[in-house]
Length: 149
Ligand SMILES: Nc1ncnc2c1ncn2[C@@H]1O[C@H](COP(=O)(O)OP(=O)(O)OP(=O)(O)O)[C@@H](O)[C@H]1O
Ligand SMILES: [Mg+2]
Image (cartoon, rainbow, N blue to C red):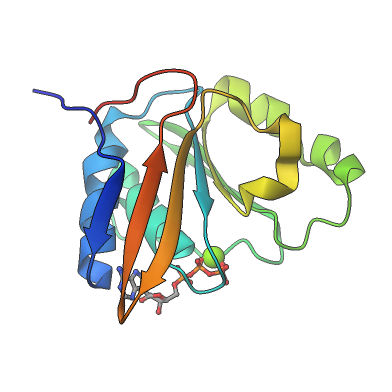
């Protein structure tokens, strides 16, 4: 049975972030875009890593794409792009990254999605991590279509 994804999630520790990623992982299909925002160290990569490992069915290495901007994973369950736009130098780079291909053929996880401005697909699921004491709170917005998990 699937349920609407809640608009806020309490994530008191990293295990809770990983549990949320494990819950979202199996419902994703090609064309889905997940925008992961929040300040440096908020847990965006932790969430993406757990999600990718869940879809891989193994604890594969998932490095932060801070310097490469994009890491792609050709998995049996479909292709996943893990994108980190923190170091994106200009809007011109967006087309060079080939994100349009990702949006059409892959599941796309994007850290620092605000760098895309209007290039972020409007049906993306937005998850914004906020620090709350030693833990985090995730604020979730569904965009132009409903999301369930
Ligand atoms: N819910 C949580 N509560 C407490 N710590 C957490 C939680 N989720 C993740 N962390 C911790 O936050 C730290 C930073 O995580 P991570 O590298 O994923 O951040 P990030 O948002 O990707 O940062 P950057 O913007 O630099 O890419 C890690 O040490 C991780 O263990
Ligand atoms: Mg990161």
